[in-house]
Length: 66
Image (cartoon, rainbow, N blue to C red):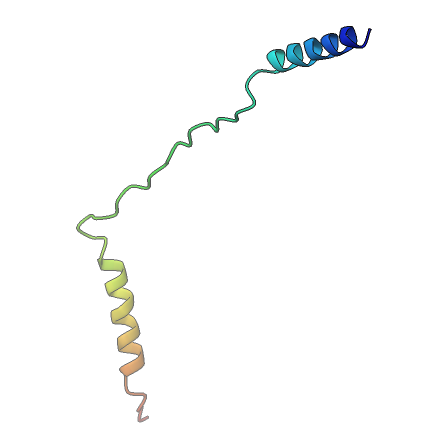
């Protein structure tokens, strides 16, 4: 009687494992989105203008005679 119960439980667990499928998780592949390169001819003008404006304002003379 106990052999029958053990065999039936083993069959139930085996059937459950077969029905559930693989226990190994395979992650989906992640798609990388790349930003376009900003290597155009005018890409360096804006930072250069900001540096020039900062240099002019910080080194300018505040002597104003009225």
